[in-house]
Amino acid sequence: MELKEKQISYTATNTYCALNILSEKTKNVWIVFHGIGFLSRYFIKYFNELPKEENYINVSSI
Image 1 (cartoon, rainbow, N blue to C red):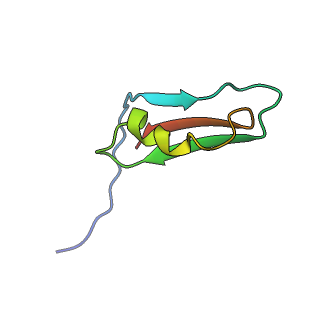
Image 2: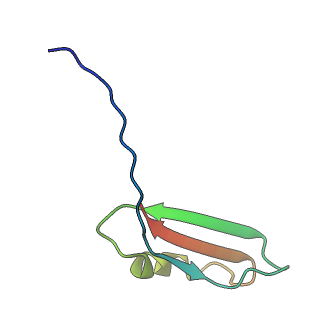
């Protein structure tokens, strides 16, 4: 059997969580993707220890 690669396109809507405030003091912007099976609101807690004024974090599942 011959292998044929094909394409599919789709539109998806998902939620994300943001931690801290984006401001002039922000030094790092984190865009974090995690796997399915772990909600963003729980996963984002791993970033709580980073300095709040310097880090703006967005977390979403893929």
